[in-house]
Image (cartoon, rainbow, N blue to C red; front, side, top):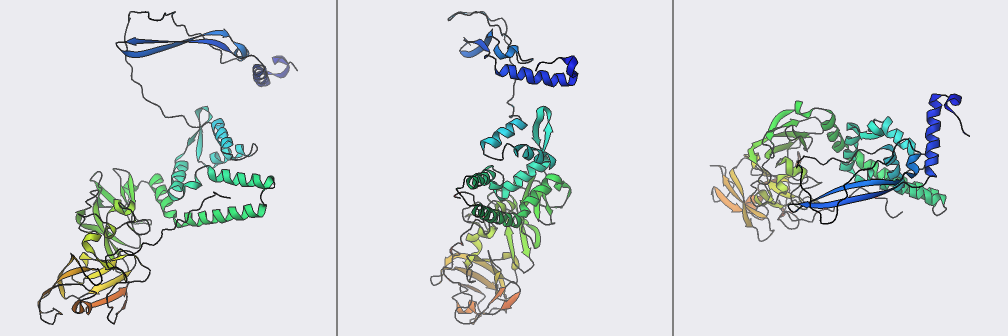
Length: 462
């Protein structure tokens, strides 16, 4: 019914007027206006000007705001020439799109089939209560540092946890149950199986999220100690030896994950030929030591390089890398089921040894007898492993003829093979028989790669 401001009071009158005007506007005719656009040229450059003239205000006559204002444009004629009065040049920059408003988010949720009319508002309130977004001017939702870090962390681990498809698929499955096209037990069982697998994978990869959160909410530049130079800015990166172990460049604001359970030190200020990062030397507690490039370790430069998504220098196939597979790889790892390559640890002098690039298998060589050792580009015809050049110390040569130098295969040459001691970590055992030190399969380290099974699952196909 109709009412006056005196009857209901000023505050109630404002609401009453808003609702009434909105209702009347919805049943009013359209607003009509004539738009004019004039195009013209100045020295071959195209310009345009637009104007409009109101014909019928329609629903805007009822609304308090939104009335159309005329924009006057002179009555030009086609082909007419006009004199220029003045020229001005202004600078402008493109602007990013605005943050989503509550209504924008509701529209997108409805588009992707997320939530119901009753639950959508609750979802929006939840992300505010959990400090993922903050309500800004114009009721637009501005992501907080926590919200951005959480989304980026999930994207590092499993992008399906972020995109709307996951929730949409669950809603769709519930709709199938409501329509009698699927059994509730099957839908619940399928969803629990998928989310259990995803949860276990997130727990396994939680270090990635933790690393991102620490980079977001703590000042890494104030922690750690300078160790090696960044290949991008040539400034020193800090080693943070707290788990997860990582190198952080405060100048580039980049963080590089490092292997855990060992010690890391600078490797003679040597640089990676691919990205100019200084190499570091990682020594495991079990006795294995290998060089790595911080960039290549986190972003393997070659397809199928590395193990478990990480790549050390021993996995590198770059032809000029003096620390890569082509320079230090000797033969395939003898350990059953391992696809790694036994590589010469050039830092182990004088207690020379070969370490597997993947597992903890280790071969000790010549027990302090060798003075120098080098992997040659000569292949053994029998086992296809690389030959070693060995220079022995005076009076300590194991060769029967007393010579101090020899080039041979450690697997096939009897004199070399007799000096081999195999270990797994620090648990030593000697190998006996004619196969001493000999690898299984091809000796070039080209063993079959283990299939990289992706533990992440999808909701497709339900």
